[in-house]
Length: 154
Length: 154
DNA sequence: GCATATTAGTTGCAATCGTAACTATCGATT
DNA sequence: AATCGATAGTTACGATTGCAACTAATATGC
Picture (cartoon, rainbow over the protein chains, first blue to last red):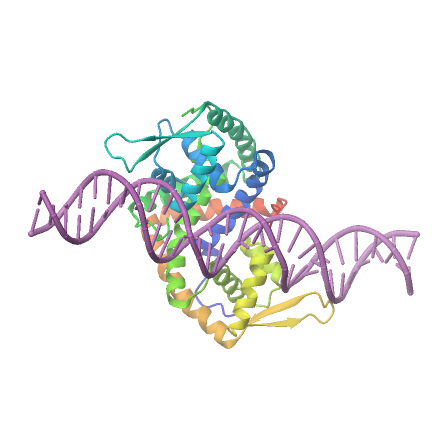
């Protein structure tokens, strides 16, 4: 329509979101069908499963860029499934340490198999060079994010 | 917790989503505060504004990776604001050609100024090398997406 | 040591979303 | 030309979301 000086296709939020939404939804269809997991639930499980020590809900939120109410509800759902347990911090009783149960770890293991297969599919389609460039670029974004003030609502 | 063979931080959907959500929310806070625009509305306006001919709702959805009901509602909202008009296709009356009005073009111009400023901020924080790598990587993803079957729900 | 601010996490509620079903139209098949 | 399937877009409705307010606990300033 107009076309002056601004290229939407080079605008990072728009472009990143399009790519992210596309690849994430394709994967979500899989775990949703097989495990009746929502996106926040999978992300919470993934964050906990990939970390080698318990995490607080706030840490999960920061790691996955999810709103704290999303995390709160996902944690409640996973707890109800007995995939995680909460442990109150001894020094600071506001804090809860979240930890996967045996069943949670097993589920995480199964889901990461799905994930690995999907990642392999993506690797093939995107190509090694593309994936390498993406990794480099995303690292730069992640470093930048660290110095950033987080957006309101995370 | 576990840690065998799968690296969440290298899993593209998770990683892309985290970065996308982070940068998109920071920008959303701006246009939401100044224009009371929702995310789907901004994306629809952006898709239409950046294209140099009218688009159908389906095209907007494909371009922005939004669900068709999101697009439908965003279009209705923008129409109510008189930022876009619909024109029925003459050959196929199922199709509506969406076009920005003068006011819509003006709004798009103002919003792209915000966007350009934000992009500049991101450029600085991420660095030229990182942005270059990201561009290369995202191009590869976009090419792959073209050969992909779209996820259910887009 | 008390008041005030800050932080972790939860929840009520209104707004938004996505599924599925719908209308309307078109294309293909016979 | 009647039927069947596909496509564009809308919408009812149940599910999910995020804002704001809340509880509970800790940290800070005086």
